[in-house]
Structure formats: structure tokens, C-alpha cells
Image (cartoon, rainbow, N blue to C red; front, side, top):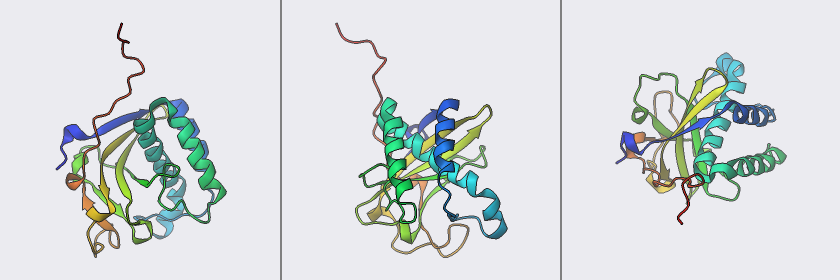
Amino acid sequence: MIHQHDIRTVSILPWEMNLVRTMAATWDYPGRSNIRQGDDRAGTLSTDALVGQIGTYGGLKLLYGAAAIKEYLTTRWHANRHKFQGDGGSDVDALNLDFKASLRRDVSKSLLSYSLAVRPRERYDGWVYALALVDLLPEDRAVVHVIGWASADMLPKEPATDGPLAGAFVLPARELHPLPPFRWLYFERCAA
């Protein structure tokens, strides 16, 4: 079981937001929301694309540290070359990892009260799914909360039948595995 202290938080700075916004804007394919419907969808497509890209970049920054920019740009380059084909669930080039990002609309709500939702067309055997919740902040900044991860085997056998996540395989955040306690040591004092 995951706890609040297991959640990893990554800050996205204005210059990184500019990079992510640029990449999100290259995704001009008329995608679809898994939550929004009808007219609501058309007006929010660019925000939804941006939130997904912020979540992915935040996850990469957590995994790769300073090398996240290279990994993000490489992955986006491949995805943009084949945008009508989809990424096959790989948000990291050639890795079985798919970040599921969502905008956190209610900051008073516990991060552990959210759920990981994986649509049937996004579910792959042997895959790993990480839940990332995005807070958009003033001054062109964001915070990404990488809650935890689940393997495809941990997802329910049947999709949810009602609510906004109907049709998705839904796993409460509290049932996710915590991320390992890794950290980047670039700026720690070197041993003598």
C-alpha cells in the first residue's frame, strides 16, 4: 500500500514549460479525451494535450534528471513522426512505461484519493503504468505528482461500468506501488 510520503513531486520551470508547450502544440491530430465529451472536448483539447505532456515530462525528469530533456525530445520526435499510429503505450522511447497524467482540479483533495485509469486500447501485457497528477501554477510553472505505478497484471480484469472513468480499468491510487527512493546526486559533495 502506498502512503502520502511515497509520492514524488517534480517542479516544472517556465523554460521547461515552454519546451513542453511547443511539443504539445505539434500534436495536431484530433485526439480524444477519456473524460470529457462533446463540445467540452473541442474547447479543451490543447489543455488536455499539454497536461499529458507535462505529466510525461515530469515523469521523465524524475527518472532521468538532467537527461530528461534529451529523452523527452527523442520520444516526442518518434511519436510525432507516427502520430496516426500512436505510441503503443511507450512514453519513454523503447520502454514499457506509460504515464497516465491528469489535471488535478481540486487541490484540497488528497492525492491518494485519485485513481489510475487505463483504457482497453491502452492496456498491454507486461506494461507498467504510472499515475501523474499535474498542478498548473501561475507564472508558467507546473508541479507533477508522480503517485505510483501498477503493472498491467494489477489492473482489474473488467473495466468500470459507471462514472467518469466508465470503460477504463481503474485502480485506486492507494493500491499502486510506490516508486523507488532514487534521487539524483549531481550536486552532492563528492567524497575526498
